[in-house]
Length: 306
Image (cartoon, rainbow, N blue to C red; front, side):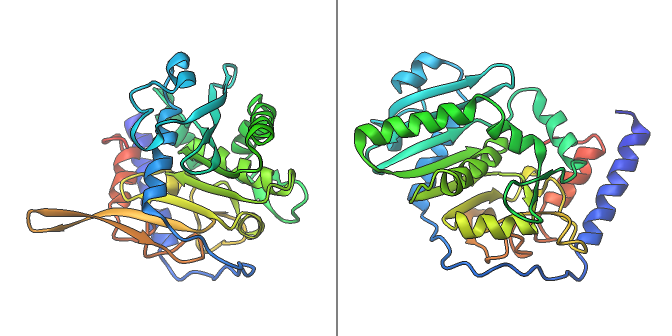
């Protein structure tokens, strides 16, 4: 990327941030019967699953003997490991007896492709009508990664096998970054198309995947959803949210839990802030005071990358 292009991109990023910091049109969401309660311990457990799915040693994963396969996830029983080599995707399904649940974990983007993936996301448009949901539009790439690869049929089959053996268990779906996007589509698929009765989705650093109309449907069908974000992660800010066009732009669904650090002298405290029910709480990761503006500018100007 040439110096001139980087400079233009940096200026454009700042312009978009200023635009999105102005007076917003309010998005009206349909009533959500209840919002999920954030559980720190459960988040700590699920982030271990979201981390383990990145490992490439299939033997260690299948036997659950890897370095990340202990502590809070000890005793996890893998039902199936799914690897789609063609699309560079990976997921696993298993039973966590301490949670009395089936856990589905999706791997996010990894390796040298992360930078190109993030840059590509910045320009992505809503480009697919979600089936059976009028006016709902989503990101074609994320939708296809779950629906149009070998992941979906293998995951559905593994969940069925787990339920056949253990009975009807709760289902917890998780993933980080792009894996979080696929986790959200999986949770919606399980609820809408397969009538699963108890589905929870918890993602980490998930990008936006659809518009406000999609958010309304998603929130109705999968209300037990938590998106954990971090103040120095650029991915949850992509694809961009344009506050002056809330019905046409990408939009996050609730409920966000924002992790950030507060410094008091020489002490640093980690804060977990449970955000509002809009999905785009301006006092959480979208806070104009968040370090993410500088990170965005640095990224597109050729500075340090996240």
